[in-house]
Every structure is written in C-alpha cells, then in structure tokens.
Length: 165
Image (cartoon, rainbow, N blue to C red; front, side, top):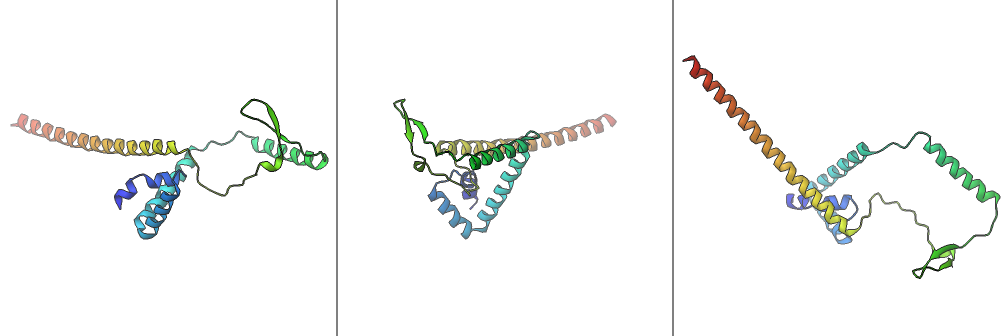
C-alpha cells in the first residue's frame, strides 16, 4: 500500500491532473484502504496550508474598485436597453466575422480541483520524486554528520585521557 501512496497518484489527483481512470482507481483504493484515505486527507491539508502560506494579499482598496466596477456594469445594463451586439471572432484566415451570442455557453464551475495540461502531470510527478530524493539525502547526510560529530567527541575524550596519563 505504501508503494501506491508513494507512486505520486495522490499528488496528481490533488492537483486535478488525474485522468478519469486514475480517479476511479483512487476512489476504490481510498474506500478499501484507510491508509490511502488518511494519506489523501493529509496531502490535501498540506496543500491547503502551503497555498495559504503562499497567498498574496491584494492591494488595499482593490475590493472597493471591483465592487464599483460591478455596480457600474449593473447600472449601465439596467439603464441602457441596447440590443445585444454580436461578438466578433477572428477566424484562422484573419477575417473578422460576427458570431451569435448563443454560440457561446457561460460556464460556472463548482470544482475545487485545478485542471492542468497532461504534460504538466509528469513535471509535477518528477518534482515530487526529486523532492523525496533530496529529503532522503538530507536525512542521510544529517545522520552521517551527527555520527561523525559523536566520533570526533569520543576521539577528543580519548586524547584528553591520554594527555592526563
């Protein structure tokens, strides 16, 4: 189960780059194995914490400007009863053409997941794997350094004892 958790599929899912098949597999594994569910919850919590720590506060007064702009748009729409204008679209031949407004669909999303291009999935997976490797090296060298410091201290103690004799 640890191999599945360490495979990077949880990270891909949390970033919203998982395929439908990967999502189905993860939901099955999550329901069957509590450790997968716990690892997924922990990863989501960590990602939220990272996003919260990296968030940049908007400049002061920006919310007022946005609110005023929306109010202006609402006032303009209610007071000016102009006919709907067609949106213009530049085709691949460079000529401008009129496109009826019903050809475009407004979409409101309720999803909390980011959608990324599939090639980025491998980049994120590689960064994750490299992070694990660097963490392993950091722990290894930390332990080696600690052991060397301990041996150095023992040698200093031996030298002091030999000097006393």
